[in-house]
Amino acid sequence: MKYFNLVLTLAIMGVLYSCYPKGPEYVDELDIVISKYDSDKFPRPGTFAMPDQVVYLKDGELDEEHPHDKDDLLLSQIEDHMKNNGFELVNNLNPGDTTFIVIVEVLETTNVGYIWPPYYGPDWGWDPWYPWYPGGWYPYYPWYPSYYAFKTGTVRIQLGDWENRSTNEDGDPSIEYVYLGALNGLLEGTESYIDARVKAGIDQLFNQDPFPITAN
Amino acid sequence: MKTLKIFSIILLVAIGVEMSAQNKTSIYYTMGIPMSNTSDYIDKTSFRGMGFEYQYLLTDNFAVGGVLQWSTFYQDLPKDTYPLADGSGAITGYQYRYINTVPMYLTGTYYLASDDATVRPYLGLGIGTYWMEQRTDMGLYSDINDTWQFSLVPKAGLLIPVSYSTSLYLGLDYNIGFKNSDLDQQSWLGISVGFNFDY
Image (tube, rainbow over all chains, first blue to last red; front, side, top):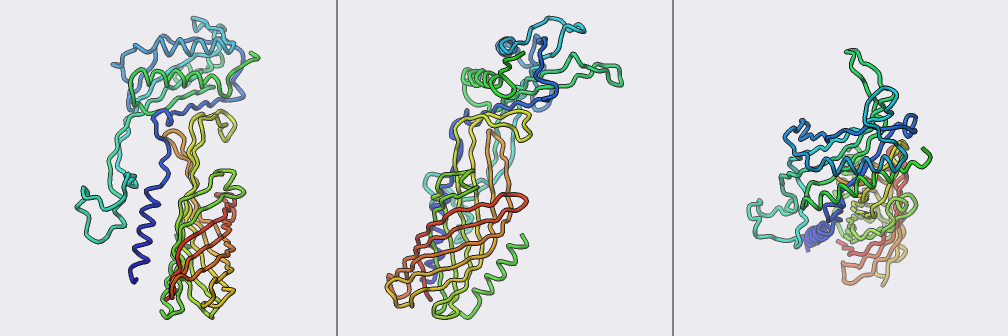
């Protein structure tokens, strides 16, 4: 009886801990789509210019070796959405012709780290494969160190206000971004699975605030 | 953290008072039905919780003690679009909401029947603090808001003796964590089942 409360308490803790809610189960449940804009400057009617390539960045560095085989797919989808929202495509950056320039970037980030997650194993108990814990002091048992490594991908679409560009101290053009749209998720799964997620993400981006733009 | 230390000292002193047959300990499983602001954030009942209560009987019918408890509320929401807080955009994704709470409070309990009764109803009141963590996960990002709230807990329940020193413990408590600068008032109805031990 002396230790009954302790044993019962630990048992209940164990059962409850194994039942702790786990959150997302599938990779695409971690996909998010974010839009942010300066409502004083966007949306407004105008024209836009598209780049002919996507910029790739890997862990913060420009990745010039990255293949450009997906560029057309990404750029044409964005171009279609811009046109569907009333913006007219122009193929030059002449003063007076172009209102916005579109910049498309793909960022790949490798995340590594060290965490002490709770143990989510299917059968919480005295697991024989974990034999090296100090004897008799079990409560810390469900906690074990773990390294993690995963890659995330972000597609970033920005609209620069070309019409109202200024010149900085060095005499170079300075362009203010008036809209940012971003898709972010885990880079897991087959290529076609990732492509489908990106396509759905871009469609979603042009379907949430401030899009769709009807009175342009 | 300071609040936790003060509470721990008081609890230890209370436990350290002469150990005679005047002590009661309860351990219990607890569910939580969210109310008001808590329900606005998570409206699903929590089935994850447990608690521990120690009581020292000052008279045959009146006890003082302390409670340490843990409950987790959880709800996942389908894919949806939410406006950004400053109104300048939106975010779309699945949302996973959690409230982790660790109530710690001192109690006063009045037993409406003597300890040889078949059923021993009680009324009580708890005053203390709740550690609250409200966490919203979207994608690979979390918005975490954790804080300590002053709490008040009206309680009622029954002890049903099953042996000389052991009783079945059935309890209801209305948990109120008062609004502070970090978090709105939180409240839920707790339903607890467990065992009480006299020693």
